[in-house]
Image (tube, rainbow, N blue to C red; front, side, top):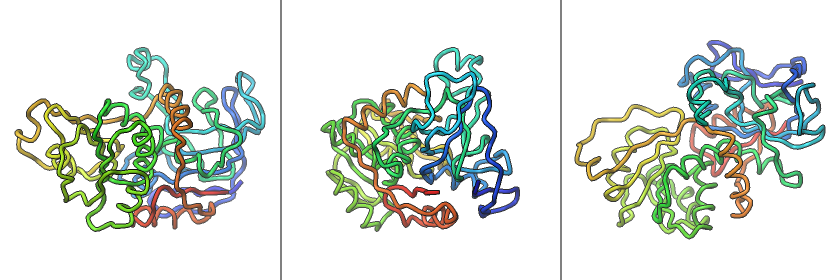
Length: 327
């Protein structure tokens, strides 16, 4: 099979011909149809996330068809379409797992980080951690739902029932969650890079009541704000934008350092919270909700061998929606 591989000390992925991965007794093997390009992949390639297991095949927004089923796997069928998310396995034994908070597992495996992922023709995955996906949907359109959608939804749920909801960074996750928020009759406020008119126009097309740069004010106080951009300086900015008792959610796995800010900006029971990973229960809630809301992802497909180009375009902010690799 072909795979895009990250090696120790490298800043670019290398296209390689590898043997098909062996399918373990509790795994399934997939022929990959599409794999989304996530900002977390960029953090891994740019060495901002430490200690990946190298050499590594990145990618954790994988959509594919099952070609082999391990002997201990039940409830899945050959030819079935499934998705492989960031959370690839958990220990099931630590206090967090026993409390139903597997996203905080003390000994997890993460797809495309500590486990090989979907920048390839094939992959294997723990059968207990894949999601059944719509058989008749476009696999390219489904791919961003596996992380931008899933972890975005966990952030969205943590924001509570906010009538006025701000998104800082209007990329893959925000463009999915904005559709759900508008469908639920919430007011969406989109904050982009200053001067990024295309992203602001895109947000308005999806129903945002206001779109502007992160240095601008919409003229109203928000009930909650979700920060998708990996920019720590946006936290003090967002705190000033939310009302008393408002909430700021940090949705990324990596973020630059947060600068100091006056306690007065946090006072009046404002909250800053972070989201870590996802649970399988998030998928059980999110996928039906996205279907009911009629979510349509905006994607830019790239051939598998152009993974470095897709990462470059993401790094430079040239994308609206999500990049997706197609083997």
